[in-house]
Length: 442
Image (tube, rainbow, N blue to C red; front, side, top):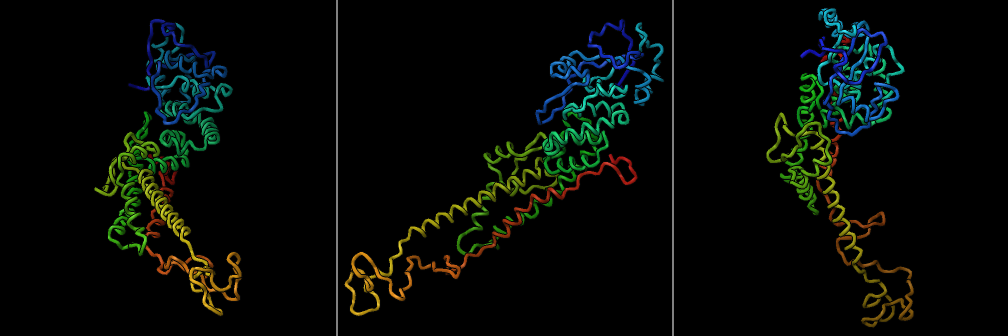
């Protein structure tokens, strides 16, 4: 079905949808059918559907218009000048024969357009700037982009679109990272190259397969190129991850005394292979742009292209959980060792049996040399060195403790390398909207 058709009705009053006047001398009546089309954004953003009238900016008015549709009195000249689609329909669609008893040409839009979004664009076409809202939310902006795209109305609304996008960026700085999919379509329609590049970059890093369009007519070529970047990013992330696991399994990063390699390997296997509890937590915390969630293990069997159901953000999240569990285990072990050392009682030198250097032997079991009475010791000019109950410890040159056998293992380098995986997401280039000569790439 065409986006617009010229219709003949029995009476101009047969359609009892609300009537909105964009031009008092209108020779065309634009009929917008009731719409059930909603854009499935993940975020619940407030709506400001004030395109019909500056005083009608409540959600109740917009909901009523969605259910009943809308009739808009417009100028056929304005429509033809702004849109080649309208111009072709008016010039070659037997418009004269289609004039109704009210003297107007009735143009009925296809289903799927938001009546409020249509009214906003029609006001912009007719130069009614005071009726065009200064701010719209992301969902309404996507509906506007859909109408502008289908009827090739960019030139008529480009100035307003720049303001809508700029205000939305300032009011919600996190909108790109939270909702990259609608921004891909919006930036493509309104020729926003920087936003298009950033949104496609985020989609490649967050998605776990070909992106869901959320009901928007995103071109298949764009979806394909985003998924190609997702696969390339996963290939770069999984290669060092599998190498780290192989190194730990082979014992090349063996720990000299504390078995850190075994501890790290165990925590990584638990997080990467993804038990049921880990998968449920991953589903709650990882932002994805597809309807599937990565549930397959990352070690056995190892994922291969095209990595179905697997996203870069999911991989990084699993690695981070494994490293965090490893660090907690190391800290707990070090804390237990510290408490054990503190609990060791060291016998004071002045209580040693056999006494110290001096005249006469000390009585066994009694304070040694240098004690005036049974209560107060007298420190000699040179006291004996303290005796440590733990033979593995001795005072270091910095006053702290030093191990006789230095602790060495190769896990530190592996932990550092895995901690850098997240930075790979920043190196995704995203898609370029326009070529060097200004033509659209997609």
